[in-house]
Length: 179
Ligand SMILES: C[S@@+](CC[C@H](N)C(=O)[O-])C[C@H]1O[C@@H](n2cnc3c(N)ncnc32)[C@H](O)[C@@H]1O
Image (cartoon, rainbow, N blue to C red):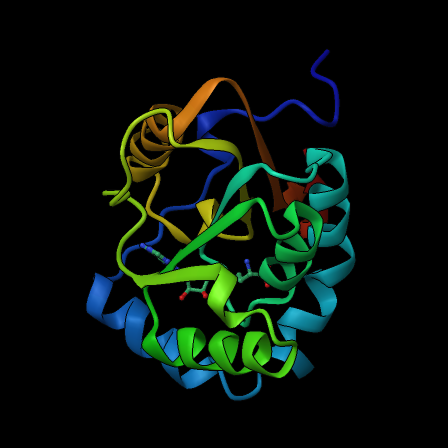
C-alpha cells in the first residue's frame, strides 16, 4: 500500500498558463502577498531554510523568492563573506524584496535578477545551497524536471536543495511539506 507521503506524477496538477500570465498574476499579487498566501506559507519556508543549514561564507541562491523574507535571512546567515543571489519572474515582487533588503541595510550584499527559473543565468557549480519555496508547484509539470536539472547544474558537487511545496491529500490540497 502506498504511504501517504508517496506521490505519483498523476498527482501533480498541470499549470496551463503562459509566462506573461504568470508574471502579471504575481505582479498583481505582490501588494497583498504578505498578508494572504505568503503569511500562510512562511512557517514552512522557514522550516526549509533551517534544514538547509546555511553557514557563514557560503554562496546561496533562492529561486522564486517572492517578497524576500527568506533572502533577508539567508543574507544574515552567510554574513559578510558569503554571497546571496535571487531570481524571480515578477518585477513587482523584486521591487518589494529590494525595499525589504534596503530597510535592513542588506541590499548591497544581494544580487536580484528578473528571469525565468527554467534558464538559471548562473555558471555551473556556483552555489553551496539553493532554496525553492512554493515555486516548483507553480510551474507546469514538464518544466519541473528541467528546473531540477538547472538547480543541479548550478549547485557545487555535494550542494544542497531546500524546498517546500503544497501537497495533495485525500481532501484536496491540504498541507505543506518542507524538504
Ligand atoms: C507562490 S510565490 C512563492 C514566493 C516565496 N518563495 C514564498 O515562499 O513566499 C511564487 C514566486 O515564484 C515566482 N515565479 C513564478 N514562476 C516563475 C518562473 N518561471 N521563474 C521565476 N520565478 C517565478 C513568482 O513571481 C513568485 O514570486
